[in-house]
Image 1: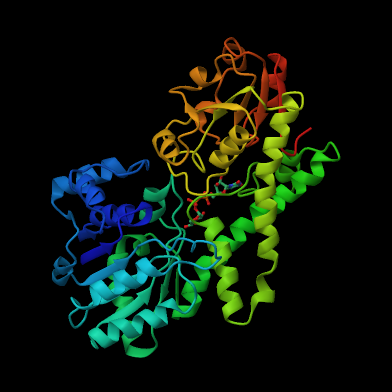
Image 2 (image 1 turned 90 degrees about the vertical axis):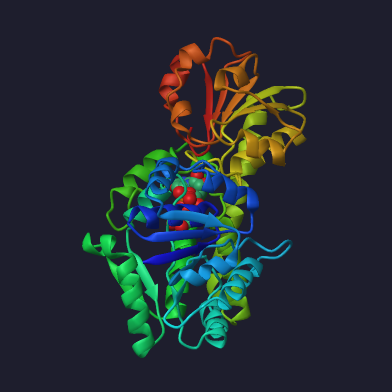
Amino acid sequence: MRITVIGCGYLGAVHAACMAELGHEVLGIDVDQAKIEALSAGRAPFFEPGLPELLASASATGRLKFTTDFSQAAGYDAHFIAVGTPQKKGEYAADMTYVDAAATSLAQYLKPGDLVIGKSTVPVGTARRLAEIVKAAQPEAELAWNPEFLREGFAVEDTLRPDRLVYGVPDGEAGEKAKAVLDEIYAVALGNDTPLVVTGYETAELVKVSANAFLATKISFINAIAEVADVTGADVTKIADAIGYDARIGRRFLNAGLGFGGGCLPKDIRAFQARAGELGADQALTFLKEVDAINIRRRVRAVDLTRELLDGSLRGKKVAVLGLAFKPDSDDIRDSPALDVAAQLRAQGARVVAFDPEAVPNAQRQHPELDFASSAEEAAADADAVVVLTEWKQFRELDPVAFGESVGAKNILDGRNCLDPEKWRAAGWHYRALGRP
Ligand code: UDX
C-alpha cells in the first residue's frame, strides 16, 4: 500500500516507521521542519525504544520518506491522521485545531478510491464531521476511524503486534471498501489472529476514550485504596497483588504511587467529560472528576511525605529527584507527575537536583529553575532526601548500600512503590512510600 501518515509525533512517527517495516511505501507529513529533518536523516526526534532501529532499516529500503509538503500526499492512496488533540487552555475540551487542519489540508489532494483513516483520540462525533469534509472535496474517497492503543515505551511492539484492531467504517458498500483497504494495511497482524472489531464511527471513537477512562479509573481506584492504607498501616502493594489474582480484576494497572500522567490519560478523561456534557450525558461521567482528583492528590501527598522525611520543613534542604518523565522508557514530560512534584518541592523552598535517564533536556526547557545532574549518584550527593518519582529500571536496581555512601542523610521516598522496603531499611535508610507502612 502507498500510505501517508499526517503528524509525526509520538504516535505518527512510530506508526509511519512500523508501516514501512510491514512493507508499505510510507510518507510521513508534519508541519514541524526540525522534526522532518531529523526523521529524514534517520534520527528519532524523541526517545522511544526500537524506533531508531526501525528508522534505520526503513531508510535502507527507501520505503519511508518524510516531508512538510502536503501536496506530495497526492501520490498516495491511504492517509492516516495522527496529529495531537491536546487539552484546550483553561478548558476540559480537546483542541481540534490540528485534526481539522490536517483534514482540510489533505482534502484537496484526495483522488477517487482514497481512504482517510483517523487515528488521533477525538471527541465522539469527529469522524462523521470529517467524513463530510472528505466527501465534499472528493465524493469517491472514504473515511474510516481506526483508534490507536499504543503505549509510549512499547510503541513499536504495540503497533507491530497490537492487542486488537478496531475499524470504524461507514455502512454498506463504502464500509466494505474501507475495510478491504484496512485489511490490506494490517494483513500481517490479521494473519497473526489479532482480534478485529468492525463497527461504526461513533463506537470506534468511544472504544478509545472508554479504554483510557477505564485505565485511568483503575489507577485511581488503587490510589484511593492507598490513601486508606496510609491511615490504617496496611500495604497497598499487597492488596493489589491479592485482588489482582482474581482474573476478573487482573494485576495490571494496579500499581499505586504518584498516579497517571502523560499526553493521553489526563487530557482524555477531561475531554471525555466535556464531550459527554455537550451531548447531555454529563452525569454518566461525573466519576471521572473524582478519578482526576484522586490522581492529583497523589502529587500533594508525595510532597507532604518528603516534608515529613525532612522533619517538617523543605526550606533550604537538598532533595535529589530521581525521574522526571511521566513513566519509564520515555522522555515525555507532558503532564508528568514526577516533574510536577519536583517543581512543587522547589516552589516550597527545597533545593531540587534532578536526574532522569532521558527526560532532562525536556524538563530543563519547562522548568529551568530546577538543577539537573547527569547521574543518580550526582543528584544524590549530600542530599537530605532522595525521592524516586519515575520507576526507571536503573533506579529499581540501585544498591541501597553503595548509593547511601554519598548522601547527606539516608531519607528516601519511593513515589512509585518500586523499591524493596526491607532492603533499603536494612541498609539504614528511612524509607517512606505512598500506601505502604
Ligand atoms: C496510555 C494507554 O495505556 C494507551 O493504550 C493509549 O494509547 C495512550 O495512553 P501511555 O500514556 O503511553 O498510554 O502510558 P501508560 O503506560 O498507560 O501509563 C500512563 C500513566 O499511568 C503513567 O504515568 C504511568 O506511570 C501511570 N500508571 C500506569 C500508574 O500510575 N499505575 C499503573 O499501574 C499503570
